[in-house]
Length: 217
Image 1 (tube, rainbow, N blue to C red):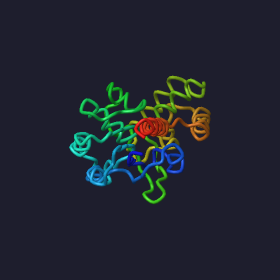
Image 2: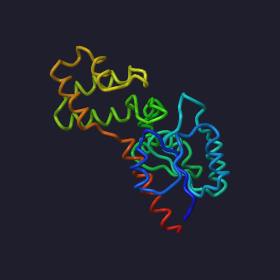
Image 3: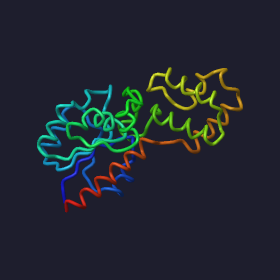
């Protein structure tokens, strides 16, 4: 079997990831981690999570070094989606909706996937904007909020600095644009059935690699 190294953090819990793909799981990638994976003999490297502002992010040249050595490099969900959209013409493979949205310039900022998380537990402490977008669309489709409320909540989410983005926070920032009943209804919906596009894309990437590795075995 090929040696697979996956950089994973808050996008998907480790226990769920290991059930999909047996691999060596490492924490969110920072500058230098890709070169270390190359030196450690990886045949496939999957970039899902990486640091944004906590440390120096994974450099494009690191990814290019891996690709040039014949290593299959896959990106999805978070930093992986962002880098794949920038480097798919150079040999990196992008997977998932978030990658495609970056590729199509529907998303343009790393702010869309950024969040803060507990470095020990990996638990997310804020909500990434892309997940908020998807939850708002889901809530409107379900009749929980109106298009006007959707627009007000999305504008509020944009205005909140990413480490502070939570559903209660954006509902509070929306202020009088939402009546009390709508706020209560939306927050109950967001707590019970929020969209998690980052998780879905992370799963899709691991499934892709699982199938790829089976073909190489």
